[in-house]
Image (cartoon, rainbow, N blue to C red; front, side, top):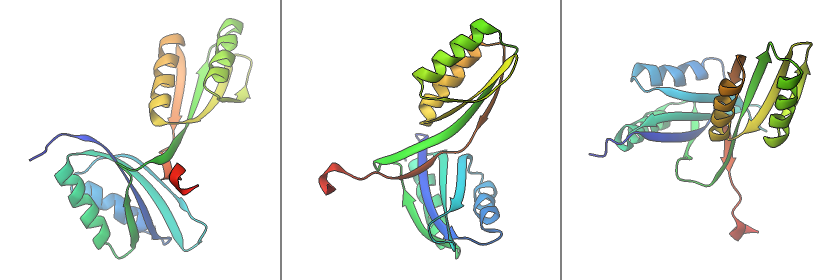
Length: 169
């Protein structure tokens, strides 16, 4: 039995109806599966939503999760992103409070380095927006925690789509 835990991603196409998100998250909690990240939004078809779910599990548990999701009436399609080439990003907001001119200068340099946007600016605070991979956002958070005394972090879940391979061009 392969009991090695690793990050895994699923993309779900689901009916855009009240209660579907609750049923999906209920499946995870009822079976004691942890949701590391869950993002949902309407697709180009207003009757269909797309979910991107990150979980950490072993292979056997992950296969069970996919089977259980496939059995749900509201689930139209399950796509395992784990070993596919995907374009996946998440949004991260970092608010830095109690910063002076020196810290603000450093924040502008960090924003430039990480292609972030300064979305709000005050007398003694700044708000930066990052849209990049979860791994890069992890690195930003670590850097900000080391460099600044008072930060507030808000992360959105990852969203992803299958990449277009070079062979198809």
